[in-house]
Length: 238
Image (tube, rainbow, N blue to C red; front, side):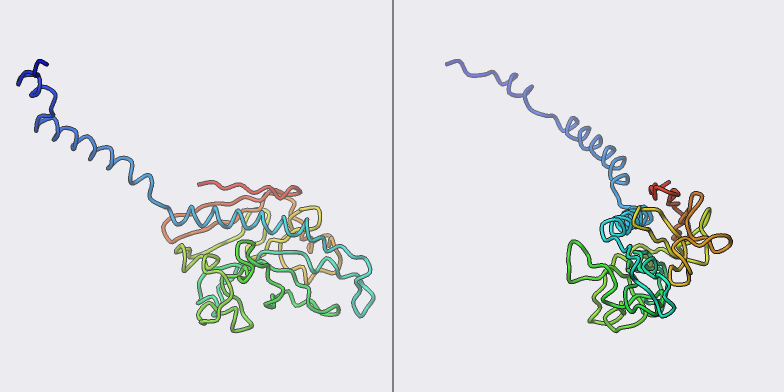
């Protein structure tokens, strides 16, 4: 068998110049692609919150609270005060950071406080041992600073994503800090506990009539989450 010539062997190998050229090209591609693959905490927070707003609506539709026989001491129906809701806050139990809690105000027939007890908070569908709160007033188990905290660290937006504020706007009043849903999936704002009927009218109307916005800020940038009236459809603008 004829041996390959030395000239052929030489041509089949990479020269040092070619190797350097390839390394330079790889470096340029890496510098272009890697920054685009880095996570953006603000966007991650917005995606998570939007998902959990949808989950709150899902709970409201699947766990229908409608019950015309539920009466208070004055024989007034109160079933609507049990509606599933997502509430934002920055209490000491949340380490004074922006966080949120998903719950249904089910405790007691005569009194609905509008605040969450531990057993009223939704369970994490991925881990039933966890409650869906980023820290809430009340039991030690709801205090994110405590070793026995049963909530979810990611629901504390300040600690997990550096979020400094979560503010409602548009069709929602900023100071109410709550989004809830009825059994048809329609979105409401504010405390259900302070309503006097399922669908208050006039100045106490809580049913969202125009696009409600939720703006998340991290100190330097912001993301807007929009919630449509009637359908409760959620979208995010980055």
